[in-house]
Structure formats: structure tokens, C-alpha cells
Image (tube, rainbow, N blue to C red; front, side):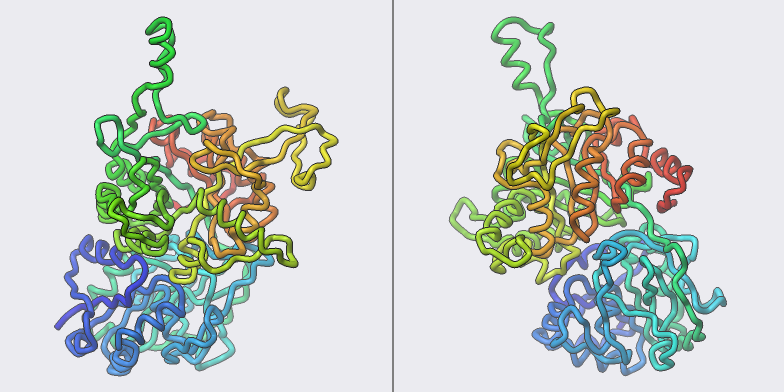
Length: 569
């Protein structure tokens, strides 16, 4: 008897397990239909696509036992998909039927005035002012949401409105952040990824007597028209490039224009030996990945990225050190974690093949929330452009890493990391990329005045140019199913000159999924500049955080002073 967790076989459920251990609650896993009888409280941390969740429950013989468990009156806590399965159906997969406990359907966010997925931190608003009904939630806190589909707040519909507990606004849409009635409590956000505020929600529910968890009264019906501005925050992301050093240890490193080895001054050596030393310096060691991840979590990073840039990513499922890093980081970090490097179809040295979906699944089970794809995304778009379409973007064939992972885990689980560089051309250039040209400003840097350029995609860490522009790439991966773009700049990487605002604005204008600006940040004001001038959803930095040249708290203080909404601790 006691607390049980339900895992239908997909997504990152390990993070919830880590969170429960952190707040001191023991649990068991549902391993068979019979376990529902033993459970006195149940948490369903659904992660991924609606269809995958329903199919996973049905194939394991858990769908009807779950319905019966909830009908029995025993306490239920659903998270994300664990909330959405309570509804009749979802537009994400209309043929897949939910439990139908809440008589409404899950719809899709409009991207007319905002990026979709809704990915990031947002606030909640209570419908019942009585603090005793707040379930550990705080209107001053922000919680982590990552979803494209939502349950609209239908306050005129009494049968649906009685389930509403709190709402959240994204753009001009108001949707259900939490539902609560009788023995059911569920949230659209991820408490296990919402830092201390999320841990408080889980702990508050579990510390209630089980009898109280099972007898929540309906919430009063309150009209909730959208406000002029939502509570969505800009995200600050800390990135760690992880690779093995010359001694075989995994370290966090940072390159200057993608070169991660130390540069040896020619005055230290002489002649040919000096040239060799400058090209073969030691790998920069800026710290241990797990220790840095924990430090950035404590300092207030909204997300963390671990990018595996070492050579053994060519056999990622045998890469036990990197998987161990992810597991260890997930045990101490309670914000979203993105993993990149080697997310592709691979073959082990013994000839055993592994699909990109299998590789991604291993990282999700280790504790990752999103996977980042780089080189393979470029090749996938080149391939899709060979299949013409009316929109000029091309057609996927369903086999790319982006498509297969997005189908199983949802668009929000797939990040595409883009590595473009400038290609300078004459201002009167009339080639295939003429519609994407950026022109140097008269008051801009001297080297840009009177010039024009487009942005060319590269692969293999910037070592190889491809006949593909950045606009062609991002439009292509959006169509394939990517949920977010991590936009690097080879020209600005490690310079400290600020983000390439022309590049960021160009990409932001051409797609409707979230964009993370990367490369070039040298001071807190650069974050203000990129948010104000491009309206991207997030900004990432690495070296300035590793070397403590700029603190995450300094960045957020500067943003707040400029009127930009950010999550605070």
C-alpha cells in the first residue's frame, strides 16, 4: 500500500522520481494492472505525445485499470499528459480517446500572436481566493510549461468549469493550468522541472492526509478574460559543451569560434615547435559538468544544456560516461535539461544498429527533457527539399530523427541546433539567397558598411559548409516537427561582442516555433538587447557564466530593470 508512479514507457519520468526522493517521499512503480489495487495514491507523470500515451497505456493493459482507479475515489495527481488524458480527446490525435472524465477536448494553441509550443515559465491565477485550496501554488511564482495543446478555460460550461482550479494566459489565450475536483488534482506544467516552486507543489499534495487529497470541492466559476499582457517570462539558459580531455576525463570546455583548445602564445616557443603548440594546445577545462550544472541551477538558470562534443558520441548508447553525467545532473537539477550530440541513427562497433529514436529514448530515461539535433537536421532538410511541395519547403518522408522523435515524444522534445556563418556577397547580388540578404548599416561596424551577406548552414561543428541557407533550414525543420531552434553564430562565438541581431531577427521572422539566441554574449546588456530587438523567447550563454565574468543573477537583475519579465528565485 502507498504511493505509486505510473510510467507508460515514454519520456523522462526519472526526473519526477528524483524530485520525490529530494522532498523525502517513498514510492513504487506501477508494473502491472494489479498494482492499482495496492496504490492508495497515484501520480501519472505523462510526458510526450497524446497518442503515444494512450497507446502505451492500452498496450500495457493499464488504460482501464487507470480509469477504475480514478473512479474508486483514491487520490490522483496527473502531470502534463497525465492531465490531458482526463479529457475526452486531443486535437493532437483525434482518433485516440482519453478517459473522458472531464467532458471537454484538448485543443491547439494559435500561433498567430506567439510561438508554439508554449515553452518556458509562466504564472498561474487562482479562481478560488481561499488559500487553503491553493495546493502549494503561489501566484508570485513561475512554473515550467512545455506543450502545444491545451485545455481552454470554458467558464460558461458548468460541467467543465467545475474542474478548473487555476488558469494561465499565453498570448491572448487563457487555459487550464491545474484542475481539481474530488480525488483528482492535475497540472499542465511540470512541477518536477519548476525548481523550488514546483517541489513545493508536489510536497504540499503529498503531505496532505490521503482523505483530504480525495475530497477536494469544486472551484467557484469565475470569468477570466485575457489581460493585455501574459505572465510568460524570458528564459536564461546556461550551456555546457562536454568532451573528454587529453586524459580521458569529461570536462566542460568552451571554444572561440568553435576551437576548444588553448592557444599557446608564440613567445612561449619558437619556430616549427611553436606553430605545432598553437594548434595542439590542451582542451580548455572550465569545470566538471555535474558540478557546474548544480551551480547554475542554484544561481537561477531557467534551463541547462549539455552538449556532448567528444568523439565517442558516434556510439552514444555505449557512451556510459555521458549517460552517467545526465543521470547525475538530473538528480540535483530541477529545471529542464537538454542533451545534444550523437542523436542520430548509429551502429555500435560490433555492428548493432540503433535508431535515433532509441538513442533519444536512452537520454530521456536518464533524465533529459529535450534532445538537440544538429548535423542530422541539415541532412534531413536537404533530403526533404528533393521532394517538392507547394510551400517550397519540401516534404519529409517520416524517417528523419526529427520526425520519429517528435511523433513519439511530441514536438516539444526536439531542439534543432543551427550553426550558420556569414557569406559576404556584392550588394547587388542576384543569386538564390537574394531574398535573405542582410545589408550592413551605415552606422554599423566599419567592416560591415556597404556590404551584404546571407547565412550558410554548416555541419560537423562548423567544419563543413552545406548548400543550404539558415532560412531554408529552420523552415524545413519546423515542418518536420522540431519544437525549438537553438541559434548559434560561428562569426560571433566567443567574441563577447553581443548576439548577431541580424541573424536572430531573420530566423525569428521566418518561423513560429520558439528560438533561443546563442553565441556572442559578453555582458548583461547583450541579453536586454537581443530580447528587445528580436523578441526571441530565450538567450543562452556559456563562457561568460563558466568564467564568472557575468552572473545569471546579474543578467536577470538587468533584464528586470529594463522591464523584461524573468523568473526570480
